[in-house]
Amino acid sequence: MNKLRGSLFLLLYFCHGLGAKEYVCTVQEKIFSLLELPALITAVVFGFLTAAEFRGGMLGRGMKYLAAGFLIMGLNHLHLQLISSFRFDLLFEIFGDWGANIAWFTLLIGSWLLLAAGFAELYRSGKTL
Image 1 (tube, rainbow, N blue to C red):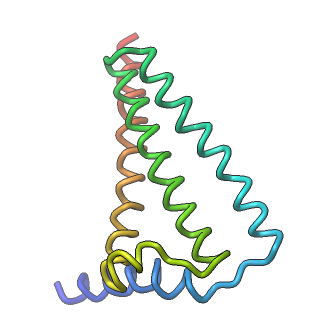
Image 2 (image 1 turned 60 degrees about the vertical axis):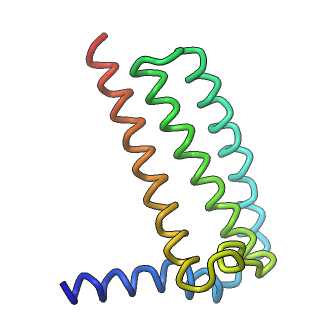
């Protein structure tokens, strides 16, 4: 149990708090990472629009999960851009050091789980066709 706790501590510490604040992006990296945001916004908008057209069911539920996962992923990405470009950590300002690490990690895992649930729903709906 202590090994698990120690591993979780290191993961939280290096994922958000230390790694994101000390890395300095080049101008090219900043431009390319900012170019990802319109693609994420497009995925979120069309994901929710597609889910609304399906009006429920497995396809609609799967698209809602995907859109929500992409929304959280986009917000996380924007948060990391604020840190690397402007040295402003919104989660740190709201939750403090440990709270920011836990919030960021929770949002990251949450986006992965929503995407996995969305793809699973789409897969199941495809099997029933």
